[in-house]
Image (cartoon, rainbow, N blue to C red; front, side, top):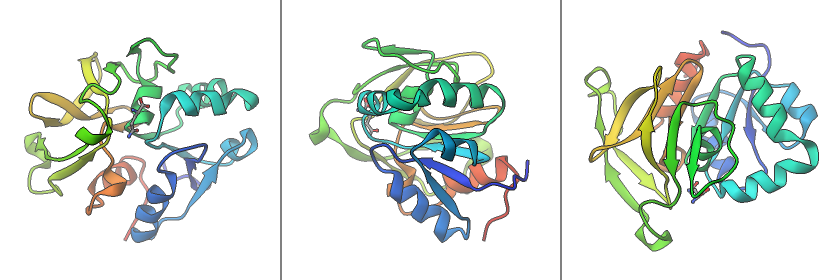
Length: 197
Ligand code: GLN
């Protein structure tokens, strides 16, 4: 899909600006999405890291949760990172409302508190080896506890799936926008047929 509208980054809360910076480095423009009107004017969406419970609260006044769900159902491609993956999951532990757009279950904050945030070496599936930046920043990340049908795992942290893909969706439980590389954003752009530098 080569869209005529820009990529939107949900900008209610969290690490949204860093995503725009990565796209900028790749020569791709993006816009911030805070309103239903702005959501209507994009061809792909980034759900950034941050605090998923806070994002859910901030979505309420404009029914953005429902609107985003509808657009994803209608084929809007999504790059989700950390809290963004929690928003997309089918089941969240402890229970929290989610879109169910990605067939995975997640446990929030499964690696411990903020002080246990870390940079980890990832193991990539064979087709992406050599292609990779290798290290990933985890900040109060969720753990993926179930990978459902139609979801492919592209990378692991020890035995935990941390980079997942299903049609139209690329999901990282870490923060690729805070790392040195641009691989994850490039994979996303390639997947939606967007040219980049
Ligand atoms: N702990 C956050 C949550 O549950 C996710 C952390 C992050 O996005 N870095 O939403």
